Length: 297
Image 1 (tube, rainbow, N blue to C red):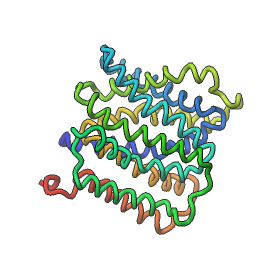
Image 2 (cartoon, rainbow, N blue to C red):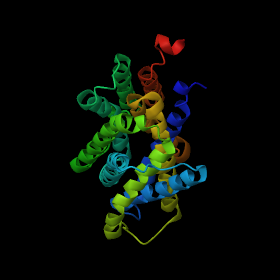
Image 3 (cartoon, rainbow, N blue to C red):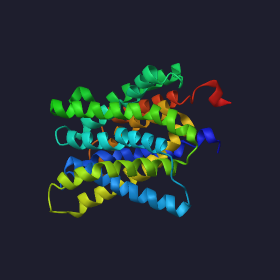
Image 4 (cartoon, one colour):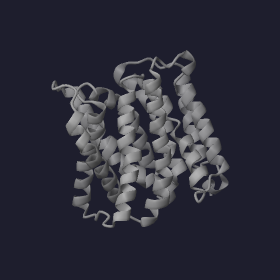
């Protein structure tokens, strides 16, 4: 497998894990506050990542500048979005959260254009992102209504994707050139997020002392996969395919959520869901240059 193609497996794995995260967050809110959900997923993710780093003998960064950048990235990928999504999902539907999250690539392109001109944006990437956005709208059938939600919840979701959009070009510009392993970067980032959230968790992290198996399991899966392995895959994708491509994974997450609901919750699938899903995949392929002449050589 060529290095340029080696991002495909982590890309699909990341889409699957993050596609399930909305359900996990909803479950976790049964016994945790938004602060508790954000900290819980970071703490569990940090533990699994540090174990992986230890077993593989991978060294963590040692200089303060790198740790500062990792901390900034943790704020943008873990701390603020973790709080904002958990806060929002107390007030909006999971469908609406998925729709807004899927516009992360557009936020990424905006920040690339404004602040990070060194990473050139290609016409095919812009076209792919727009096609993907159309696919998300179709797969979720928003003309049928997207559920009710407060203005505060919607604003929180847009603030979260703004953080996501800024994080990708920062990773590409300041962390990728360091040639550190994805495991070291992910472990540093998620651990920094957990340490940042710890004081707030101790103050207001638990909403209920009644612990049911389902919500506890959901939080474990959210932490181990959604904030553990997921960020290893995320760094690998940014390194191998670039931040515009990496951000398009959020186009697949609502598609995953729809099919997870169909398989495990016996929810009905209407015509627009598979059609929209196909358009989402087409948009991702266009953005990734799958139809360019270079890709066919």
